[in-house]
Length: 341
Ligand code: KG4
Ligand code: ZN
Image 1 (cartoon, rainbow, N blue to C red):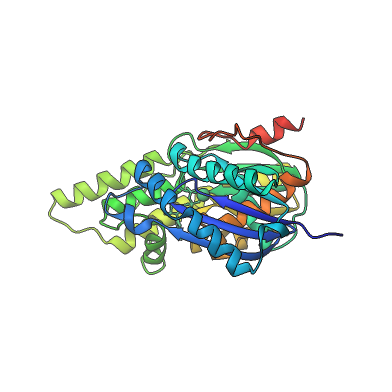
Image 2 (cartoon, rainbow, N blue to C red):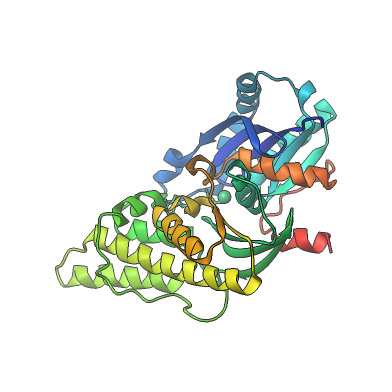
């Protein structure tokens, strides 16, 4: 069978990335320019600044990616781009660049959902076995997704307020850790003790999550300790926070694995890099005797390789966009399911 090469573009937040992926699971070349240092001084991503920086580097990345792969557009089958969810202006830069490329090269344009990309980052780890469940944990989302087959997603639960990544970043900020605080909090959690009693968010029988309460509890705790002239133990707080959050994520994921009788669990999104979460799900899946796939650390946070992996299946089933493609900042994975019913 002829190989399929997809040139993919990702600009939904603060990473400008492009990649060439073969047959949905071979990363031929990927180049990513991160803006983390630019946004650090603002304590979070500033949308307008993100868009401007995408514009500044995107064409240079195209050239660099082709050079790294030692390929030309003649060998590419399709151009794929993230069209949502994400920041409107940031998505627009990638979409317009993808349209221009598609126009110039006469290659089809394939629209890809960013969250599908996070799930498909697992294609670089192993084969999918259906039905499967994916726990998607990123800076913008916390969702439990059921997949009946390739590219068929059904959301069975999600956060009612903050995402888990957002809660990590906000709690980190309160204790003086710069954006994005998740990775450093994770490191600190590995050396502290679970000594602060924090409320377990939405500890019920539903598949929904809530993380704003635990975030407020941490803010109040830090404030109260300060008023009493005491210093908070940052490592202990990181451990207490991480163990509480991981506990509820694992509890609800295990319940869904049993109820939906899935063959595999996939972890996805930026927070899938979290060592506590990876370890706890590993143990849970061993006990349940089901396979657990997690992305390689380099595919956890935003990158275009995952978009190229998802795009292979979107391309195969015939998803195509016209030159009127627009960003969909609030795009839901359920839309893919509805489109195929
Ligand atoms: O998926 P992602 O790159 O961007 C979005 O699509 O939102 O996720 C970024 C989020 C940030 O909130 C960051 O703090 C979090 O992922 N993150 C982590 C870890 N590495 C990244 N959170 C906890 N532990 C980590 N090791
Ligand atoms: Zn993401």
